[in-house]
Amino acid sequence: MPETTVLNYAAALERLNKAIEVKGADYVNAPLNKNGFRPHCRNVNEDGSGSCIVGTAFLPEITTAGLTFEDEGNNVGVGSLLQSHLDGQIQVTLKALRLLERVQDRQDSGDTWGDALTAAQEYANDTYLGYELDDKMAVPDPTYA
Image (cartoon, rainbow, N blue to C red; front, side, top):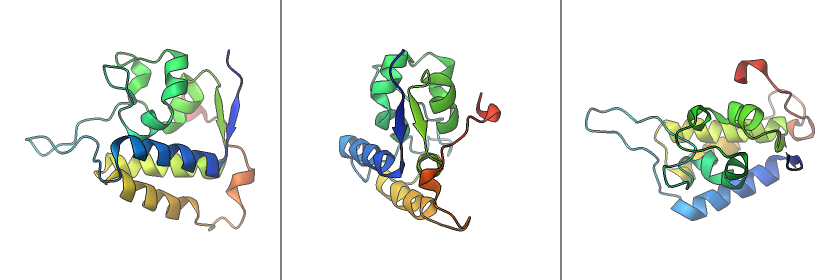
């Protein structure tokens, strides 16, 4: 099994910015179809490339874990992807997890990747809890399994 990487806010932000470099800040994942619905996002495409913003950001780990387009884990959210499907390769801080979950949520709502990241940064940097979230590790949550 690969060594575990600890991902804090800055490292998560760097990965997301690199994902945006791949497809562009104006990219919209899964635009509305002819019936007015947004198709469900997947982490990887059939050709093995990254699909959603988080799938693109974590493509090396997804590839190492052997997750493919056909796998059930391909259409899971951020928490489940990191905690259940990447073989313990990545641990994230609470602040990094807030960033990743919000960017995915905004992307799934139809925001461009650039706008989604801006909204996610604002959300992750909100200190309403009264303490710094980047020094606390996200605990595996059984609801993600």
